[in-house]
Image 1: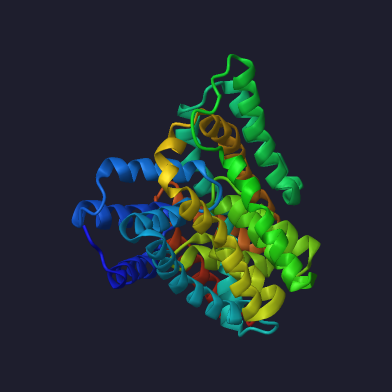
Image 2: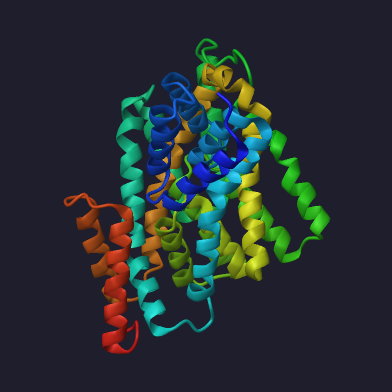
Length: 391
């Protein structure tokens, strides 16, 4: 069925504007549109694409939107559709960054940021929990699954800058273990996610050489780790960015980083947009745009270069073995990020907000966006009533 580029821009842009709630919401909206309503893709192909995107590094729901646009209009459609999905949230989050990451924001903005920041660790726990049970049910060996989970948690909580190495090591260890047990991880077709990542690694290195190093080179490297080397998406990127943005480069304070995470959750589109706030804190609007471009470039490359091989990649035993190792480690990293985010809370009342957020997310089963907005409202009330965020 022929689909015009304007249709792709309009429909993918619509999803980018109303896609609150992270990857599950994006996938649901895409399925409703391209499968259920329009019939542009059949259900089997869509589910296969979801499975393959979950095998690849980077934001899975963004890769899925790019793939669906690629299926309808080829490479140009992929570029246009992906951009239409990403840009609305990018514009919103950069506009909010001007307020929340400024040197002297208004008191209400400080309160909103501190309140939402208090709820962020609870959101991380919720994200990890949503992935934990499915991963446990699909485990191949309990002791290895627990080992990978613990490795990811420990790395995220203590040495976040090395988390990428831990994720890749866990994936490689599982591939090696299965190969040693009889070759069950032997490649059948295509390449593993690790092979694709190595192929993409030269791009950011060349880019940083062209721009001459300095702050922008550091921003590009942090963004590439987020978009090209992180398995599991979502909150897996948090310890990667927190260590660099707060501890290593000192682009942001801990409170500002909590604001960045909250903004990534309450704005529409990909959660990976959080990296744009980090880029803005480092180098202004240009840094934010650069960070977003570098973070999403691997997703475009994986689909444009490998989209025709998606069916083969899904049947690749090495890719599945790699994810069986890296996946539990990524889940552990999400729980580890909750620890580092909780350490960043600096006001006693924020821990009360954290407790309330846990109640909203678990016993009451409220959504992430509602929880963060409620926490921000509490923060505004505290700040305005006390005249400070540190009453």
